[in-house]
Image (cartoon, rainbow, N blue to C red):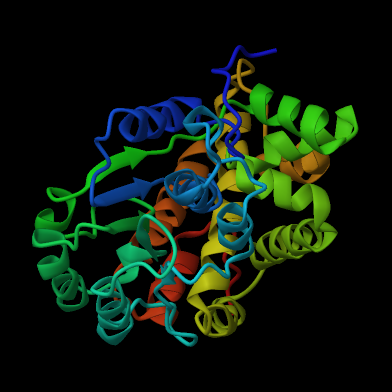
Amino acid sequence: MIDTVTHHWPVFGHDWAVEQLRKSIAFGRVRHAYLITGADSVGKNTLAHAFAMALNCTHPDENERPCGQCRSCKLIYSGNHPDMLYSEVDENTGALKIEAIRNVTRGLAMKPFEARYRVALFPYFDRAQPRAQDALLKTLEEPPPTAVLILLARSTEALLSTITSRSQVINLRPVPLVQVRDVLIEHFQVEGEQAELLARLSGGRIGWAIQAAHEPHLLEQRENALNLLENSLDWTRAERFNLAQDLGRDKLVLAEVLELWQTYWRDLVLLKSGDTRVKVANTDRSVQLQRLSLAMTEEEALRALRVTRELLHNLSYNLNLRLALETLFLDYPGLKHE
């Protein structure tokens, strides 16, 4: 077992971040803006909500906050607290638009209805274009005294320096796989073998592992995504370009697909390098991985991993997704001549 800091926040695997936020509350040093970064499903949203609960919990003992039982905690947990404000991304593009940010900042200017703080949550803030980010600057420079802003992003690279400099940055790292496994077994009653598999598949994204333990469709989606990748390695350019057109229609779905493909290419790189110190993540697909590793060079596997990571990173920017995917597929090995 991995020793962890004792706390009762509903957060797993990020004890250092919880301690940092707990101390800021205890010593009266709550900042007006926080920027929580990290991979999708690593725990950013969970930490943000736990922090909001701790800020507004009404339990008389401050050391027991968040209690999870008071009206405030329950409303925040359910997403229905009147003093929690959420920005919405565009349904078609996944972008965080300027009007969505302005709607939230107008709400922040009002006094809390019943809580100590009005808390504004901005998921996918790295998908906001510079002009949209600018819309938040005035609030960051002159925040209302009862306002706390929490920005969530994969990284700071797509963010304006004026945003990051006015926020306390908390970078969530992938959780050790042993800890992910233990959390699944101890807190979510997942059988040992299944917990081991989910931990490896998660790549340290503990939120994904917990969700996958309770929602089998996520494993079905993974199966479909990896089947699609394996099949595409034996396709022609035209067939791959048709797939690019399909995948380019939904940026949010594409991000999940690329996360899965990234783990697969990483496994192939490990197999080609002969490094036995690190186990492959997709242990349930060992036969397919071994077969594919024999059909490509280490350089081809490395290039495929690199271009997959680059596209996943660049999803934060305004891309022509179809063109970006076509370029990706041209860099993947195994392209058949038409």
